[in-house]
Length: 387
Ligand SMILES: Cc1cc2nc3c(=O)[nH]c(=O)nc-3n(C[C@H](O)[C@H](O)[C@H](O)COP(=O)(O)OP(=O)(O)OC[C@H]3O[C@@H](n4cnc5c(N)ncnc54)[C@H](O)[C@@H]3O)c2cc1C
Ligand SMILES: NC(=O)c1ccc[n+]([C@@H]2O[C@H](COP(=O)([O-])OP(=O)(O)OC[C@H]3O[C@@H](n4cnc5c(N)ncnc54)[C@H](OP(=O)(O)O)[C@@H]3O)[C@@H](O)[C@H]2O)c1
Image 1 (cartoon, rainbow, N blue to C red):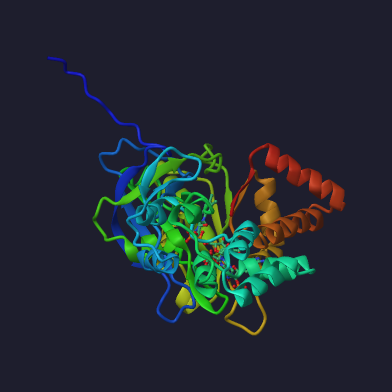
Image 2: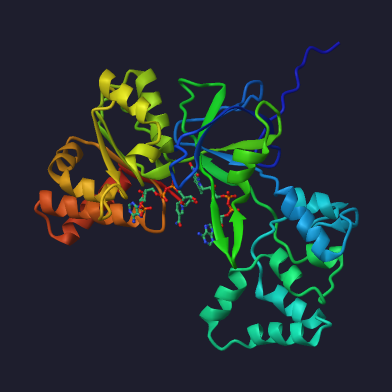
């Protein structure tokens, strides 16, 4: 008999069915946001991770939305369909639940409905959208609608289950910055997730994966397919260098990991966290942990920016400008500078503030400041994890 042990390697193509072992809301009931802390067990998976990595999660769509789509198609859900660009066959319901994205209407889909609409008034309305001269207006009309809206709004346009499935894109995994350190939690991965909710076309919408994790998955059931996505983002190997971390909102996630990591390593380098969110009272994520780290000395400095606690907005970059002199001293002492969170606005504004700090405090021209920041990036002393 052979004594060989077969080990399974879990990755993006073969995700590990993990269980959530802890789920706790970080924002209070008063908050406009629902931001949730998760602990996910990877015990027995053979998976490992590093501080700075992300976790990939394959979500399942909301069954209520799937039922509405099946109804709007006039189908039963049991129809056998072939997945687009694949050999795989499954039922319409299974495809809509786990394999296909239910948002992301295309112009092509509107064209198909216009072609199929049997009702003259419906056809004319769809043709008017397609003939719209203002591209921004047309884009707005299409993007504010989801597939279910269009099927319900234009019921005379009949599509078979397969024709509908052929119009959809694949449901892709979502990435989340890991908020724990493997040094402290080797068998768990922590996540810090803002639950996505918004309105378009007068209807309530919900983000697929954030709602799947926060509201549809049962705690302790091995039903969350995950994989570790490694990253170049991570704390410095040198335990003596200072670290400045800018992470408003869920952007704070990897910095919780960095601090845990540096604590376990006994790193002597100073740590400075810039955190911001809407209100101190309701949105101060992990406040008690930062307080304990300030007490223990692990966290040297915490600068907060609660944007909506006063009449005018205060953001992390405003705090950076106020602290320009000290940031400059830290940088000159070899500090690493990290940014995580919103890519569209925050990361750009923080970048501009950093350039300003360097130019004013280093008494440099803007060209020389840009060169200084470029060198920081080259030396991996300026790292970003933005989304
Ligand atoms: C490297 C990386 C790390 C990340 N880390 C984190 C993290 O730590 N925590 C975290 O919460 N997220 C993180 N994210 C974001 C995360 O991956 C998901 O994008 C997020 O959770 C939304 O996914 P969802 O499936 O819930 O929403 P989706 O179903 O993907 O819906 C989001 C989409 O809805 C639309 N939308 C959203 N709001 C509006 C609006 N107001 N009006 C109109 N349309 C709108 C947009 O098209 C948007 O792309 C990270 C992303 C990356 C790439
Ligand atoms: N690009 C995007 O549209 C985007 C990016 C990230 C997250 N989100 C969504 O926002 C929700 C919550 O995300 P989150 O908890 O990570 O927080 P967030 O929305 O990024 O907000 C965190 C803090 O950053 C502030 N902020 C807004 N614009 C800023 C800027 N230009 N520079 C610096 N700070 C800025 C916010 O202030 P105010 O809100 O008071 O202005 C808030 O105090 C989620 O639903 C998520 O999907 C959207």
